[in-house]
Image (cartoon, rainbow, N blue to C red; front, side, top):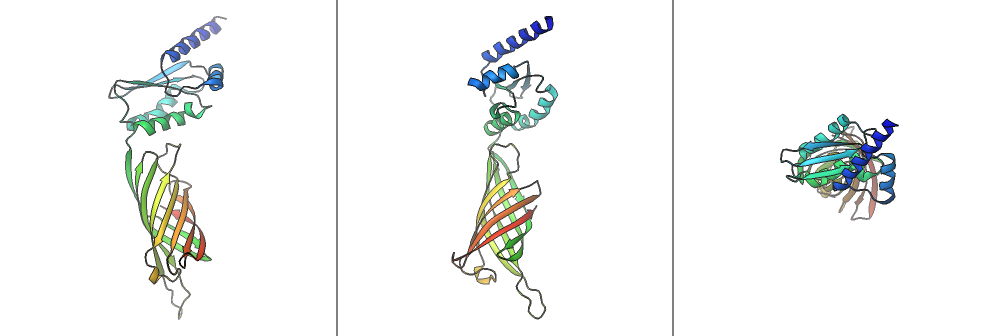
Length: 252
């Protein structure tokens, strides 16, 4: 009975504290009622930042451990250089709702308090496509400016075509595309943008033996892991009279 009374007193104290402290991700309605009943706030964890700002986490100690929260939030706070000075921001944690989950709170911190310009990315993707009945290796150069939630950039890629042999000699035909690309990973704090959409224009149409006339392509690429992507698209050639579906894989 004494133990139950102590638990109720602690829960009531934390509830009053949470009410007094404005939460940045306050649950409402039935969500708040459910969270208070199943995962009431029983503990807090404060992160003191160099600019005297404070991130305050309110959580249930049966749902999270103090050490796991430290390991989860310290990396993003090291990058949150726009965190307000002399200010305490409080978040309630429970994994049952996105806005109160660790993933949701970290995304909120990243979107609002990390620098807008994150990095400049430079890669040299290589791969293999199946293009209109032919296997076409691809090599290229790609650069992106990574912002908080998306990146913008472009690439120069060579779709390599092997025409039929003449006198037993292997010939190589290059098809150079200039591509504009948009990459995103909304709702996810992973730095690598796993989704990319692009459109491209064939630069050397006069020298191409695979395409003819005005040729453009559109594609979507999805990263499977840090080094491998699946790419699907369509190429419009012969002044947009003929369309080749493409599917392939990329490595970088």
